Structures are given as C-alpha cells and as structure tokens.
Amino acid sequence: MYKTHRSSIVICLLADHFLPHHSPMAQLRSFTYSLNYLFSVSLLLLFHCLCFHFSFVAACSNSNSTEDQHHHHRKWVGPEGHKVITVSLNGHSQFRSVQDAVDSIPKNNNMSIVIKIGPGFYREKVVVPATKPYITFKGAGRDVTAIEWHDRASDRGPDGQQLRTYQTASVTVYANYFSARNISFTNTAPAPMPGMQGWQAVAFRISGDKAYFSGCGFYGAQDTLCDDAGRHYFKECYIEGSIDFIFGNGRSMYKDCELHSIASRFGSIAAHGRTCPEEKTGFTFVGCRVTGTGPLYVGRAMGQYSRIVYAYTYFDALVAHGGWDDWDHKSNKSKTAFFGVYNCYGPGAAATRGVSWARALDYESAHPFIAKSFVNGRHWIAPRDA
Image (cartoon, rainbow, N blue to C red; front, side, top):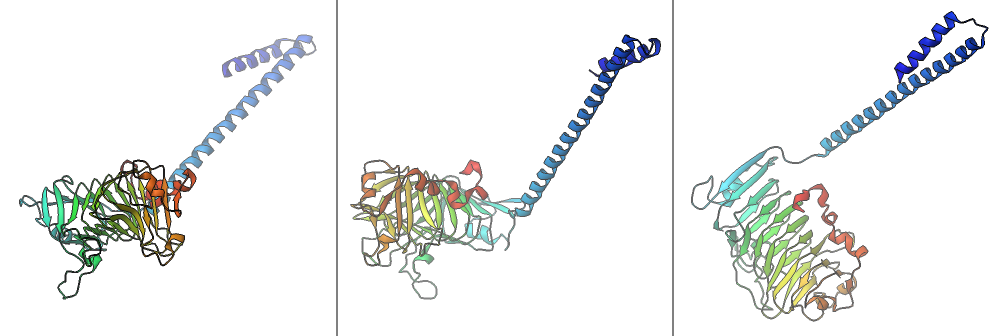
C-alpha cells in the first residue's frame, strides 16, 4: 500500500516539473498530489494511533497481571516445601508408631508433610496438636490401614477422672490444614443398647480448620465421628455407627459418602450443635447413601439452631417415623433448627419429610448447601479433590 502511494507522489512531482502550471493537466496533477499527500499522512497518523493503543493495552495487561500475581503472593500463607515420613509395623520405615512420626515434626511447622502409613492395624491413640499444620495421613487403603483404640466416656484416665466423650477419640486433630487419604479410624468399644450411659466412643475428632478427607473409613458405634469445629470436606468416605455417629458443631460437607447404621433398636445419623443463628456452621450431605439397620433418625437438634441438609441422597428403608428428632421435646428446637432435604430418593426418602418442620427445599434454597462454597472450598480445596 505504501509503495503504491509513494509511486503516485513521485509521478505527481515529475509532472509538476515538466508541465506548465497554468494547464488543466497541471491543475489536475496538483489536485491529485494533494489528495495523495493527505491520504498518506492520514494513514501514517492512523498507524501511530494503533501502535500506541496496542502498546497501552499490553502495558495495562502486564500491569494487571503483575498486580494480580503480587496480590496472590501476598495472600499465600500455605506450606513451603515438602517432606515424606514413613511408618510401618514391619520396621522397614522411619517409625513404627504414628504418634512418634507426628512427634518428630517441629512445632510451628510450615512444610507440607505426608506421613505414609503402611498396611496394618496401629493400636494407639494419636493427637495432632494445633502447632503442627499441613500434615497428611496417607494409608495404603481404608481396608488395610487403620488406627484404632477402645476408650469409652465412662473409662477413667490417668488422673482417675472419667474421660468424657471428646477425650475418647482414637485420633484427635487440633491442627489446621490436616488431611487424610485411604486410611481408617476405629474405636473398637462395643455398641451400647439405647439408654446406656457412658458408652460414647469416638473414633476420630477433628477440631482444626480446613480439613480434607478422601477415601477414609470411620468405624464406631455411638459418636463415631466428632466433627467438632472448623470447615471440613469429606469425599467418598465410609462412616459407620449407631447413635449420633456424626456429631459436633463443624461446618462440613460430606460428598458421595456412605453412612452406614448398625443401630439395633433405633439410632441416628447426625446431631449438630449450632447454638445461635449467626453461626455459619452446619452439616450438608450431598450425593450420599444411607444404608444399614434401623429405625434411624437422619438428624437430631443437639444445638438450639442445629442445621442439617441432605441433597441427592439415597435412603434405604430404615428411616424412623418422622425422620427427625428435636432432641428433648422441651426447648422448641423444632422452631429454630434448620433441617432440609432436596432431591433425595430411595425407599426411605419419603420419611425424611415426615415432620412439618423439615423443609422440602427447592434449588434456590438448597444451592448454598450443595456448592463447595458452603465450606469456602474454592480457597483451600483443589478442583481435582472436590
């Protein structure tokens, strides 16, 4: 394009030299020259404007990218570095005891530490203190790797006092950013008959924030899993018990889990302890399966503002009449608890709507409980783990 217009200008200049200025041809030549000149100048100005525009956009883009990276870097408070510790019963590892492996980790740890636990049954009580975040227990499969103990609430500790429920846990985690994969946690105390006192026996207690569990098993009877406090995500786990076998005041999502009842006369799955409407806590069960023996309450109002939701969940024919329990029938928890179901199915599903205060949710009201955002998961759960 530029060559064509430069040629036109050259021709016009030659014509200007050889033709008389007063001739019609000279006037036409002058007019043509002016047009070509103006057109060329316009193209040049347009070219410079476009160059400036794209340079400005690129600069802004780079600036925003740098700012975003800087902002992301400022927010990052995760672990730095990676370490693997091995545990096995055969001695071909760094430790024979899971607790010894935990004890070897320094306080205020800032590394991602995976404790690889080989096949076998590790008969010990394990505590992960709050000063040791970013720890993962990685087993060889929930059917072959297990940590187990046998304490009950009525048992006495070293001080001669009864342990009470929360201290019976075979494994207790106070630390944030804990995770467990392909391992089981068991309390081997026998299942109590309804009404028996002091038989609470916790297999696992999670009291830290942002905990993740995948492919794990939780085995017990009364109070199997103490989902105590914090945000937690359970994926494809197996949880077994008889009475309130998931309990606490956590803010937790159970995704594609099996909830298996071993209740003999009657039992209950979840008991949630939310105490005021401002708390964001609650248990939500999404895409789960409820199996085993009954009759079984699907939820009980342990706290005045207990909150439990089931969505896309299958219920076997074991749900008790009414489906839900307000705990003591005296404190009007049925007026303050939030119990809901959405798109559940199976022979026991109809019974989950057996009381007037259990809500049949529509998509809009169910969505806050079925999205990963319920536990702020976008900030700490990798997309592949959701």
